[in-house]
Length: 266
Image (cartoon, rainbow, N blue to C red; front, side):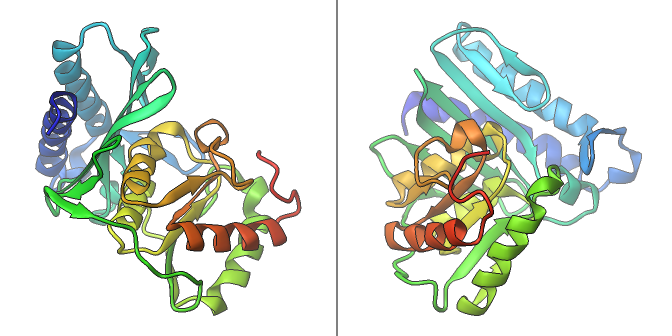
């Protein structure tokens, strides 16, 4: 494992320990709302602080883009951090949440970690070195068509202006597939695409920390990640499609056909 990726893994595991220790005492936590259907707990803040502490000790001049503390530093190396992706799940005892950490160098994703502390599943990727789950190589699925595929998605719960378009896409895809899952953690959904557990994924309005690590996992597992226009600008506009090459393109065709704005970014 590359030294930089190893630091990210150490940080993810330490954050995961904080999360797993708190999982049985959620009713005692301090919880606040950042916006409509968007919650944050003291565990989010503690996990993020621990991640930054571990990374800063190894790389004191690197910058950070973190969900809870924002952007810090202007280094060409930027760590993109979601300390607890799936906070709502965590607060309800629904065991589908993860730590997501990625390193971007001059705007290009180089390393990514998604860690599920409840299942102790560690997804890792470094550019050019492939993707792994608990040190075993993973690949995207080989399913070439929507027929019998299993898709992941996320509801546009923060920005309701996309709801009609989203429902049109959902309605078009549901009868063409084996099923659609909405588990509530985009980071894990993307990791599952990389591991072949899901054949594809789409979602509106994500933030960079929701998808940075997961996107690199898919790319290094042999898959494709784009925005709804089929361009690589998903980190900028937050609309993301992922899967193997053929299935991602099939998803894009449906998205384009059933959105009022076509493939325009939002």
